[in-house]
Every structure is written in structure tokens, then in C-alpha cells.
Image 1 (cartoon, rainbow, N blue to C red):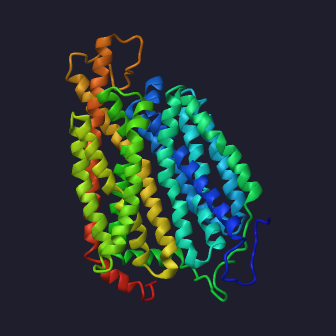
Image 2 (image 1 turned 90 degrees about the vertical axis):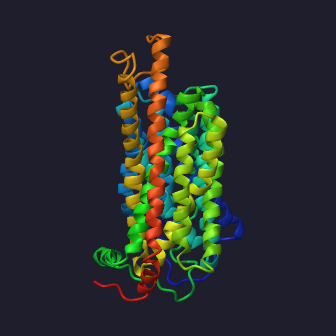
Image 3 (image 1 turned 30 degrees about the vertical axis):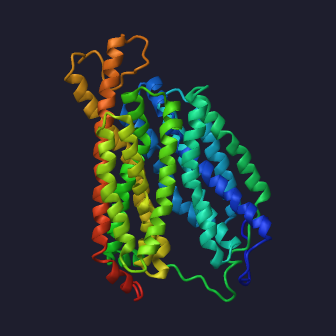
Length: 470
């Protein structure tokens, strides 16, 4: 297996036997599943971490947001570029081992800063997963079979999110949050070795049709120049950014809503509630793509308005759930909102590629993901955590316990009286409730931007067939 496997000509055939490339696809999908499990596990075990380290919501938001997204986002493009001239298998295998070690180290941290360093390392490792994996799959499968193969690989997101809740929640039933990181991170070490030892590096371009030439990539300057002439791209980019800003924030703080307001443990929350919401998210991603495909038969702008309407409706439905004092009613609202929340994911890729020329598509997607991940993933949780702290502080200052507890109070602090523990729990619950409700509004604002895209989509799609203006 050589790192710089090259090919003198394309074959137009899938690489390897059917059984072997299926094995490779399953292995890469498992890698992506572990990628997402390790990424969001911190939200599953967030409650116990906050209590043990005495963290504010803002500090926890840093750990679950920018603490991961900073290097994950910054290194994504350089690693993708490096994978074009080096062994993709080696990059994936080494990165799996790296982020798995970092995940295990999360279980040995002693405070905010050591956990932040471990989370940054997780982000470094995970940045080397998807770009080379997509490239590998494209060389293993012919163009006709790639959509299904890449769709199978993409299932790692929703499956990983669901398994993080089930595995993390189950471990918390018997062990601490530290064991959760250790037990879930450790298998990744073996997975990385399996990738390095059993996955072959295919020749680049092997499965492309004979004579097919890879289109020249436009310079970044020319690509940006073209994108600046495509308002639809920016409507969709910032609409998706606001939706991910709200979505990643809720991933971090939604579990705390159940724990502070209804008294459930972190493990119970993950298994009884968040796993079910993970199923709704999986259905949402599929349903959104299905409806866009059907609606596009009669409406050119369907990718914009289907996602836009779903987000606009999702916002108030989810907000009502957070404001409710009825757990049954709230869960019904969360499930309905969850079924609409992820319509935008497939649509944003669809639109971003449809409104730009072929040579600009890779750059357009890279810019889209950079903005969505850095602002949405990176800044969403810290901002919502800051808002939660502000409301928590306001509730404490307005109570009879001002000066006796603060936003960093712990509901499991043995030094606090029962009365102060209850006051702490009430104030924190109020802060999380209001912050999550405000975050839900951003779904609707993001949906409005998708709807604005319907006004320019047709013209931008037609313009992408013309040469880009330098």
C-alpha cells in the first residue's frame, strides 16, 4: 500500500471486489460513527462535568463549542489538501488513533483547562476524517454508485449521535463521566489500527470513466469573485449557520433542561429523551432530502423553500417545548420540531453546488463548511451558555439567596444546605430554559434567509453556466 498511489488512466470500474469495497465502506462508516460519538459525548455527560468542576454554562459552552471546533475547522482545509498528495488511508488511521487517545485523556482531566486541551486535541484528530474518506470512496466506487456509497457513509452522523446517547447514558448508569470517555474512546485505537492494516489505498481516479479529466480548480481569488456574485450562496450559508448555531447549542444544553427542571440524571436523560430526539433527527435529514427531491419536480426553488419553511416552523414549536412545564407536552413539541430541524442539511449542499460553476464547487463547499462550523459549532454553545449564565445570575440576584450562591454553584455540593441546593437548581433551570428558548428563534431567522434565497436562486443557477468573472 503506497501513499502516493497514482494511475496512468481511468478504468471506469469500481476498485476491488464487491465484498472488499463493501468492507471498506462499512469500515469508513464505522470510523465516521466513532468520529461523531467522540465529538458529542461531552454533551451527554455535561451535567456531571459541570457539577464536578464547578463550571459556568459559558465555560461548558467553550468546551462543547469552540474548544472542539477551532482546530477542527482550521485544519479541515489543509488536511484535505494534504490528502490529495499523500496516503489517505494513513491519514485516516493516524487521525482515528489521535482523536481516540484525546477522548480517553478527557477522562483523566482535572479541571476546565486540561479538559479544554483534550477537546482541542479531539478536534485536531477529527479534522482528518471526512475529506480523505470522501476521496477514498470516490475512487472505490464508480460515479453511478457514489451517491449511495457517500449516503451510507453520511449515516455515521445520525447513527453516531444516537449511539453517543445510548452508550454514554448506559455507562453513566453504572460509572462516572470519566469512564464514559475512557470506555468509548479506547475502541477507536483498535479501529485506527484496523484501518491502517486492512484498507488499501486505491489509485487516484481509478473509478472515473476512461478519458475523464478532473476539471481544473479555480484560484481562490476567482472562486471568491464568483461567489460574491451569487447572493443565493450567502443566503444559504448564513441561514445554515444560524440553524447550526441553534442546533449545536441545543445539543449542548438541552440535556441540562431535563436535569435541572425535572430532576433526571445525565444517564436517564440520554437514554429516555435525547436518544429519542436523535431518532427524530435521523428521520428529519432523510425526510428533508426526500421532500426536496419530490418538490423539485414542480418548483426549481424547492431546495430553498422546503428547508426555509421547515426551519421557520421548527423555531416556535421547539421554543414552546422549552417554556412548557409539562414534560409530555414538551417532548411532543421537541419531537415535532426535531422532525423539521434538519431539512436544511441536504438543501444547503444542494443549493451551494447548484449556483456555482463546476470548477468552484469544492471551494464553495469548503467556505460553506468553514463558516457553518466556526460560527455555528464554535460560537453557538459559548454564546448560549453566556446567555444562560446571565439569566441564572438574574434569577439568583432576584431571590432571597443573593450572595450565597452564584452561577457556578453545584446542585451536588455537600457544603450547600438543601435550601441552597434547590435555589441553585431552580436558577440554573431558569437560565437554561430561557437561553434554549432564545436559541430556537434563530431557527426561524435562518429559515427566513433560506426563503430569501428563492428570490435569487433561478438567476444564480443560470449564471453558473457562464464563465466566472475574474
